[in-house]
Image (cartoon, rainbow, N blue to C red; front, side, top):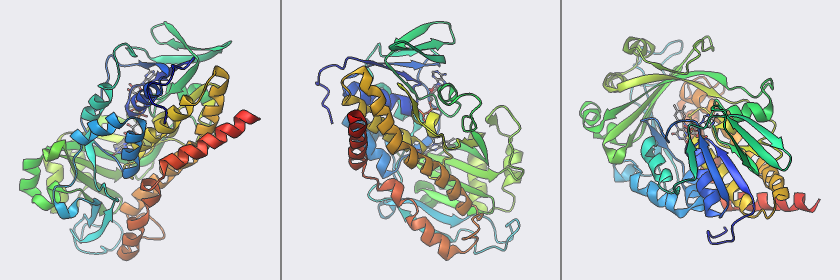
Length: 434
Ligand SMILES: Cc1cc2nc3c(=O)[nH]c(=O)nc-3n(C[C@H](O)[C@H](O)[C@H](O)COP(=O)(O)OP(=O)(O)OC[C@H]3O[C@@H](n4cnc5c(N)ncnc54)[C@H](O)[C@@H]3O)c2cc1C
């Protein structure tokens, strides 16, 4: 990895969007001593008040980009409270009452434990999103980010890339990285508005999200279920909980299936009607009903993901994070992929010595990142089918489900990121020699 005292590079990079992906990319570029500006459409950096969990791969990627990200993360990260449960990612339990299964026979009793999935040395590791964003923002020097800059166009103008913003202003850069999230404008520009993979697709699932003060959650559920991450599985729905904010708060996401597969509303996040949520979870057991009744200010989120894009770059213009590969959250891996992207791309750009070589770096980034991140998107959809007894092979066979759950995340969590970078560097070298 290049130390931050390497000579300043001769090119300037524009990063579009200041979420987890854009900020990690920016920090990576700064760490490589690459001149860069981040353009964020909002008036300030902001994240929603919810939890986000990271797998071992994502946490390693933080360290590899800049050890200060990991240091800051460690200060705010929360894991399961009980020592004997520290290594569990989730414990999987049956959620509905025995007579509450919609169209299949109950495979067991409500509350029955199906599996305990171990995530290496990390277990369940989560943060409050807004607090993690603060960690990242604190690593960005003044003057590098500009706000109120909604990117509308990206054009090649001779040697330069020209960005045009909603307010009519423009900016130049030598390379552009679109990190503007699932509804990405930069993806539309790069792939083309009419391209069949440009627009996100409704996945047929939606989720109620909310937080519960831990004391209330523990009072209702008992310490074991409240203070340690749990997943409640049922037919066409599942509910997950994990502790955040040093155990002061329980994060809840309660998933359901839209049986007609379509989402009619232009808005993807709607205020939630409690009666709709309880109707969705009719027939579920005590633990889940208590969780739902305690959720504070929940809202409902339609879950969209991206069809696999044929490329993540075009010339000196690339996509990163959700703009490239928005995923459902069923493996808790979407933001982690954005951090991996930032590790690989910032290091590749750190080896670029001239504007002409930037495209080689983007080519290598695309070659290693696209297959892996698109596999995360596809397997994330599959994960929900398992949790919701919709997987045709596993169906309601609890023993098969247990075995599948216990090993299905290993390829995400065990990734050797330095090795991935070495592979990308060699692809970049080969391309440079052509
Ligand atoms: C319900 C749910 C739960 C999830 N849980 C997890 C989890 O536990 N673990 C995990 O790893 N992932 C999780 N994810 C996925 C994760 O949230 C995303 O992968 C991650 O936040 C993407 O980060 P990003 O920076 O790419 O995009 P975003 O966070 O969407 O950031 C995009 C930024 O770009 C800005 N922007 C938008 N348009 C423009 C424009 N035209 N010009 C300039 N700026 C613009 C936006 O204001 C925003 O700041 C979850 C997702 C959902 C929906």
